Image 1 (spheres, rainbow, N blue to C red):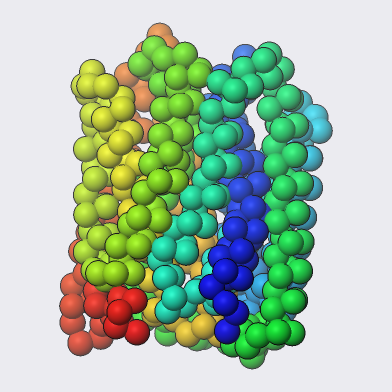
Image 2: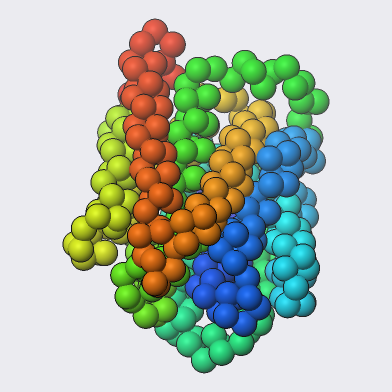
Amino acid sequence: MPPRWYRWTVLVLISLAMFGNYYIYDSISPLADVLKEQLHFSDGDIGLLNAIYSIPNIFMVLIGGMIIDRIGVKISTLLFALLCLIGAAVTVSAPVLEVMAAGRLIFGLGAESLIVAVTTAIARWFRGKELSFAFGMNLTIARIGSFAALNSPGWGSAMYSDWRLPLLVSVGAGVVCVAGAILYWGLEASAAKRYNLGAGGEQDKVVLAELLRFGTSYWAIVALCVVFYSAVFPFQTFAVKFFMEAHGTTREQGGFLSSILTLFAMIATPLFGLAADRFGRRATLMVWGSFLMIPAYLLMAYTSVSLYVPMALMGTAFSLIPAVMWPSVAYIVGQERLGTAYGLMTMVQNIGLAGFNLAIGWANDAWGASAANPGGYVPGLWIFTGLGITGVLMSLFLLRHERGPGAHGLESITTHSR
């Protein structure tokens, strides 16, 4: 196996691709009111720009996972990174909803499959070797991209005089994404000649019927994944606009508040991952993370408590659940099917993201959410609360199964037990 320093170098460089990916995705949220003012987009139109990102991934990420299992991670990573760059370039090319939506669609075709490829690579390089911590560090680097994008109204306030300028920066992030994929290709190709990397690339043909045999714990994690991310990312789509219109913040303050989720995750995700590697209890941690989501939206809807309080609750959950959820799949599914398993998981996740981005945009328009009518945001916040409750139920079901005879060791496996 490659030495420790080599594995961590691989992690940092492949995470650059995720950094660019995350920046492009979150470049829309701080622009919401600018798009409404300069291009006359409705909340439904803005919701579409993020929903259409997810729609092709209802199918593409499963195909992408199969591609990864078939042709290998390094080729797949570069292919999907190029789609991210092309999508970002198309999005900024014309001030027309249809063109911008087409760009986001192309970006979505590459972005989620890129995440699957990177996740598969990390599971391959770190399985049994600080896996949860490695996932946490990968997410920290990736979320620096989100943090930079959401705070761009602060460090790049002059850009927001024109809708196009912030999106041109996202094209630069696409270049970083491709560069990270190229650097990873070189490192893996070199390692393949010098070290035994184990199984990877050129796997057996995927049989679709096998997807239904991933097991109860896998499907419980998939269910938690879809409701958890549907309660976070569609909220962030409208968060800056919501903070400005319902709570009277500036765009800079709203962008920072939204980025608190990312800031918490950048710091705490690796720490939660390290704790899971050391002590196990992964299903238990998912239960506690899900509980934190429920009060957050109700506090924003019905109280005047500082917005830092609900965002801190959400930030803790956003750090805790991903730190244990994604690496848990690697303990449940065989390495030769990890790409497909992660692809299927992300496919179902994107059904939720597409549906709830559209649903929240529709709810905001239907109830007239605006600065003149901040109460119009309340129905959408109740939708998010319902997702939080469902997440608790799914995580409790997973915990019960992992304490039974069909357990996979999510509660017991530690770095000391392997």
